[in-house]
Image 1: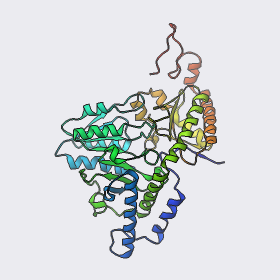
Image 2 (image 1 turned 180 degrees about the vertical axis):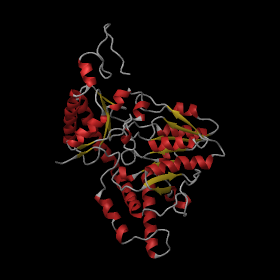
Image 3 (image 1 turned 45 degrees about the vertical axis):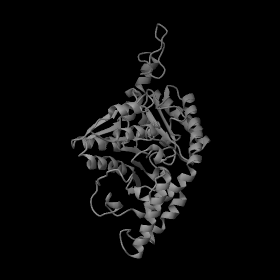
Image 4 (image 1 turned 90 degrees about the vertical axis):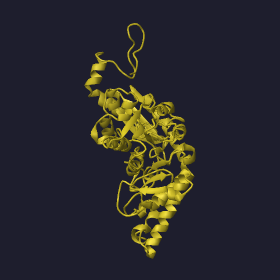
Length: 413
């Protein structure tokens, strides 16, 4: 049975071209880039090429503005903690949204235990930040404004250019988490106006084990891992040369192919959303509709009267891989803080699943997934006490409420 993989936000298959580029650095060019011999120089040259490829990918003006980490989580932690520690003489106030990735949320929460203060700006029902609310949150103690380009759970695209202008007007550094956007949405660091930006190539056909942090040379950044002087003194530890080589080529390929990949994913996204809404009753799309406000790879839905984990397991049994909540928190069985952040009812949040598309997916697969989820939902509802109570008229639907006696409809939330 050929499996259908719809979890590309957590990781993508390695591009064969990337794999071929990495192979020599495992067995032949295995030198430490900090060493002065020929083997070390070859590894160092490879790192420099990857730095140039990553810089070009996001429109950075200098290759030495690129720092390699172990992944997106470390890059996010380095940006937030590194700026906070380096700037604490000037202030102790951070600004994030209520729907950031856990690596951002938890980094900010940790800093609060160290005497820093964090304002969490709410979002609207689609998950979108209002730049004016960000502006209103800035104080004379603000040392960092941080938010994501595209949301990892619901795909909403934030007005990062507008937020970047607010940060510039207020004289506060701006950090953009582009981990859920890179490879699928165009990134121009000059237009975004961020002093720091992170992404991880394993989400667009690069290898795991390598993350990227862009840092404008004017931005203060204190290391959070101490040791040798690697990465210009900002990130100690021997670099993962094979992964970094793969990351660089993945950036180059994505830069050339991004528009084509995004267009293909957009067609699939529209087909899948339409099929799900047509075939699965009492189901809603979380976040904005398909279009310019949503990442083309993301489909997040909530089915009423059933749980997301049960849907995931039954779909997996049928050869379809999806996610239930963010991959970094899915083991907790808690409703996604992102869905709570957009005001989704707890029952609907518990019934959510997330599907993220890739270049290898097909229209035929989207039709198969819609049919499969319709069958899964029917099977689970047949066993659901909530569905039984709804059928007997003892509880109402949040998705499609029954008319009130006065002819009006109940609100969704």
